[in-house]
Length: 86
Length: 479
Ligand code: FES
Image 1: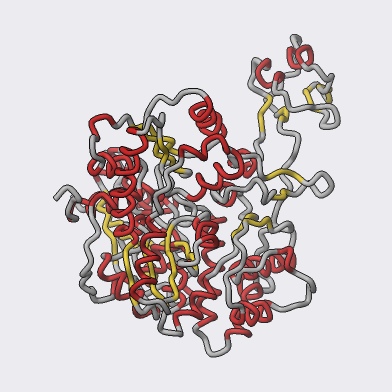
Image 2: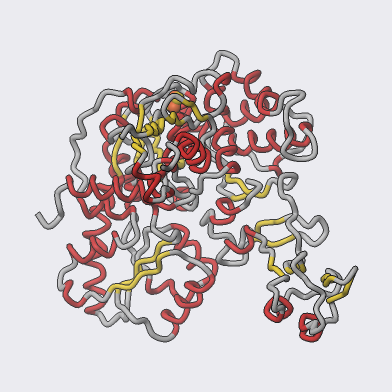
């Protein structure tokens, strides 16, 4: 099964702006969703340098970038990308 | 510290302020912060962008160490405050202040009937109300704020749970009743005679209307002298990304001439406190409390004089560390970096400590200087902090340390105050005046200990794990 990759930026800007709290993402996952998700920390994604990308903290869910990320925003994106149940 | 929009806003201000310091034109950059954060045509979080900008200006002032009450002329630009901050020789008197225009003046009537009211036949709310404050409008109950005395009986009586209690978050959070409403404006005011600087109101206010006066610019300025020494609190574990040796490098890049760990001072506190405890108990004292939490010390001074004789005389980890730095280098500008606001009070009384920063402020300085800890090389750490000293960061840690080092520790009966609130204040008074169920009392103002302090960046669970890892790798005082 290909997992959905949740990559939480832990560069200093993102970490300070809330990334440190996003590292508790595993806690908000129900067991079924957790099966489909792979969580990792990332070095600076290079997005914090320009306001054009939005605000830190940033999280990448597969190829999707979430700005001003919160646990709920990340969870919503993961649910979007979950394969339909069969 | 919680992660929410109010807190992120506070940190954004700190980052922008620190960043301005490193630009060619700090004055202009600072004056533009409110405009950049609320540009024309953008969204307003209050009534309009102009009010937002006014509030943001006060936030910038606080980041520079000025309270709303120090404003004499509304037209005075942020840059003038900045110049004054750079020129001052001593840090500002530590205070928590309310940005009055940001305070939303939460309603005083704490009970309200909601749409869930069925306008039932029983109307138990009406019958229990001692003040005749329940009125009916279009078949639904309403509370007349002129008459309501907030007794809450109607809420308990309603079978539909249609009456709710609306708390005032800052007042709920304050363990000592130091924050109350100004009758005329409806806005909150802090009574500094009562305030213990625990920071709970600041943490809980959903409008981020409470702020402390930052010493960040003073420290940034000091880093340019080449004499500033950073003293990192034990609760640093997990507060910034990367390893501790990487953080040491980052701090040096920021301009600190040296970095020391307060955990070393905590080792000394543990050893001394263990010995002191054994001595006092042998002399017939009923019990002894810890002394390292400055919000607790403020509470004793201002609200619990009965407890004073039971408080340990052992210097705090910060005091030991700062004395050590001073001894080796009398010209050092000492900067304590920790999770705590009340430490600013302790520092104001201790000539060995020049400045106090929170982890949030340190983070903002690093971001402002474009230093990413994760990209730093590791600086080897030569000094040895022990497992016990590091443990001071979490509740139970001081007890653990004293257990290890106290002579005759078999007789140690430890109890804990894990978080100061109304209830534990009452409990402590009873221990002091009547009897205490233990003979060693560890008191932490923040539930969970320092790693849950108001100046922290990380989630306590994440921090606790990193702290445990670091402790595992450190030697024990037991040898
Ligand atoms: S720190 Fe996250 S994008 Fe740079």
